[in-house]
Length: 68
Image (cartoon, rainbow, N blue to C red; front, side, top):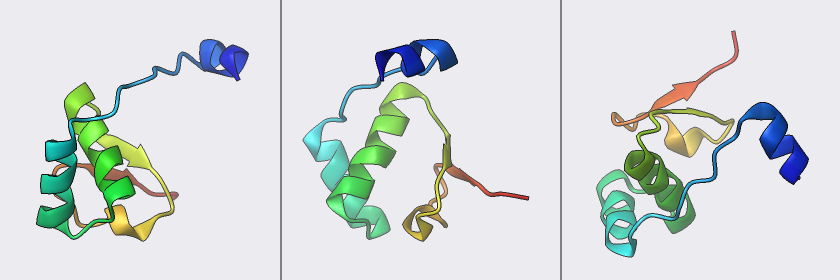
């Protein structure tokens, strides 16, 4: 796994503060795990996510990358 991370220049980001996670979960109606992902994105300056999880659609602070 570490060689994969190094090969593609993937950065490891930290978990967000629990209060940020809880506020995102409440504001956008997300499950805690999904809110944690969005919180980590916000804290790290990441604005785009590639996912098939439709729960991330419609959240104005991120962009969901779609095929096509």
